[in-house]
Length: 285
Image (cartoon, rainbow, N blue to C red; front, side, top):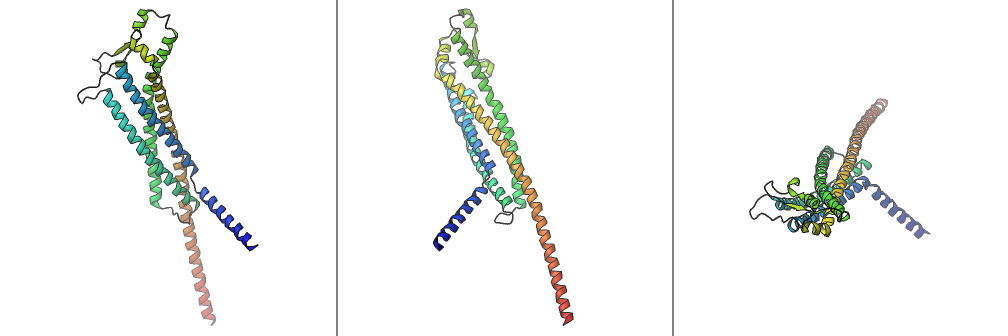
């Protein structure tokens, strides 16, 4: 009988410990972190492969050659973008961990005001700093999303034209086919002096439309755009979480000051009462 009671108390203690641990998890920060990692991984992975596919398309079908000197051409820009992608992936992996840790400490400080966690001025400053930094990153991701939409627009035009050319292949005359061209100068990929045009009557145009590289690169850029949008949503989610935590921490600090003042006043009243009692006892004696 005693053994069963001890087992029941042990199970009850384990369940209470598990519930306490689960209650301390910042679920809102956890959801935002998962969304941020998914968006950044989608943007970085798909964006990197889409840039590699763009290099292949430019070299194979548009006959764009890498500059032999250290000039700032389209291939150099693509290499710079790839290095930026590496930095973005590493930076936001660390930033997601920092925000998750901040969520754990803030949740613990709010739920256990007088326990192991203490709300300090430094903690409030850290929360305010994260709010400002997250707002800046949200604006940066909005810019990245707008910038990523440019290659999506360009590839959509090429992909849509290829689809229409396939459907209307027999009805277009050779003169109309010669007038339907893609000029890379329109998109700023090459300089004005270089003439890199690819017309519908060219054999490379048909090969490009029939290849899997164009379709794959276009959809990779679309996925990268979706990843940037997910990162923006994650930043907005983080802003809501951090602002709510800041408000809770501010109220908790006020409550903590009130409790401290109240306990001091009660202690003073208790000391006064004890002193008067001693004086009365001495006078009676």
